[in-house]
Amino acid sequence: MIPSEYKQPMEQKAFQDYYPNTLSYCYGCGRLNSRGLQIKSYWEGEEAVCVFTPRDEHIAIPGFVYGGLLASLIDCHGTGTAAAAAYRQAGRQMDSQPPLRFLTASLHVDYLRPTPLGVPLEVRAWVKEIKGRKIVIQETLSAQGQVCARGEVVAVQVPDHLIKDNVSSFIPPTP
Image (cartoon, rainbow, N blue to C red; front, side, top):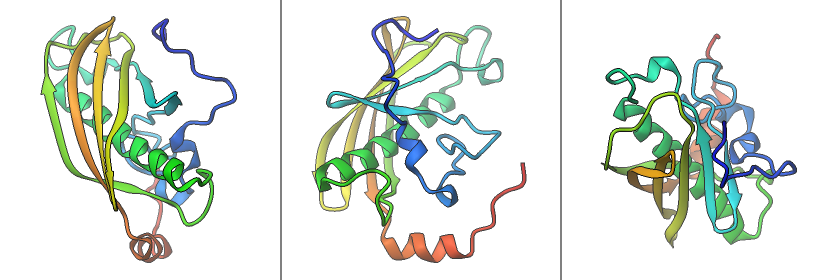
């Protein structure tokens, strides 16, 4: 069940669906990581939205999600939002080359209340600052209309040469 206030536009592709295959194995956001979370992030105006429903194995104590999952959702949604924002700022399509990828330089999460297990979690992100290769993303994570966590991701653009050097020798993990 997706929260009623969020409706994914049918024609919109997720940010993560634009990542080249060799850059799609992240545990949190990699669409090709069959054991991962495979989150999907979309623009909704100036905010990026991700909806994820935790599975039973994401338990902390009965009925509640463990904090590491929340940090992972904020982290991967934040770097995806940073990449999408960089494409927007450059006036580029997200499938254009070279790929713009961002990694986390800093992750800060404030846990505000226990987060229920088994209900859709909505992560909303927006750009706080763009300065050179650095993009600061602010986020909230909500369940059933209540903000359960707030986060800030400082994302740094990966230099082109690092992507090229690592992609040329990359061997995908076995499922």
